[in-house]
Length: 204
Image (tube, rainbow, N blue to C red; front, side, top):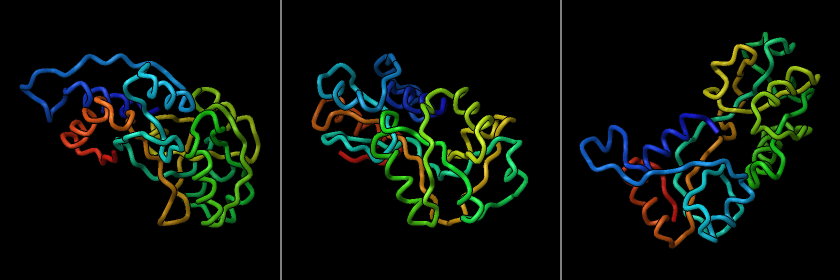
């Protein structure tokens, strides 16, 4: 989860930031790490008020406000043979396996993006890994032959061990992160008001 997303969510839900100068602060938020698979049940039982998930989500009855929407590109270790190329082709990528999320990390998203890639011309062989651990993500790329990953450029630009290249298409799959709440709940109504104030696309 990019740090800037957490900051955007914290500031938006707590009523802070430039759009809220001079107003009373909103509620104090305590964040904790919860897997995407567990979040819908915790929302339903009121154990958490909000979640942050990658879209699409398969769970029903969730209101959502999109706080992050970026195109995906190819991430390679700096020593990868394709890293020296400024652009890649589908033929280049056809020889590579894709380091990808398993179902437990991002249900819905984990299936949707490979399906989009197949439609675009790359039926990638998936290499699942727990990508919530950045060190393991980088280690897997550096130590496994013929392996690349997909991420938005902003998440890897400060890492000298990695390079980013755009996908060879004008309609690349996108990573969209959304704040979620149980539809019809007080939290969902509050999220709707925050989304309107912050300019987050909202769906009840």
